[in-house]
Length: 86
Image (cartoon, rainbow, N blue to C red; front, side, top):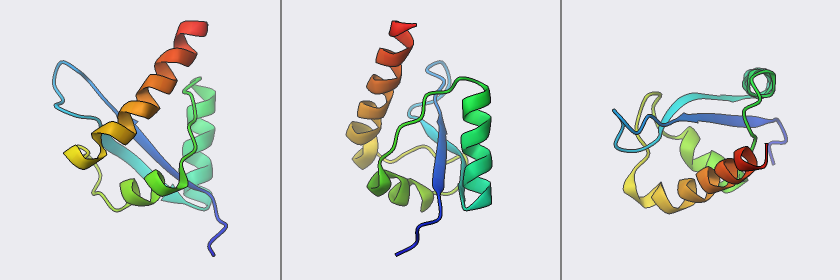
């Protein structure tokens, strides 16, 4: 089993996007860089290995498909809860 780190970054702009879209994805050193940049900018991290695997299969700048709305909504709810605690 591959133990190297994996990361996916999503972006959502409610004014122009119908759904969140994949803006970065990586494994190994690239994943570590994505994670470091997120930490530097105080972007919350959420770990879901199954969801990462699915999202990594999408092309960059692709909106997530409707089948993933529920799973990604859970991630966004987590992020909103964290932000409301600040």
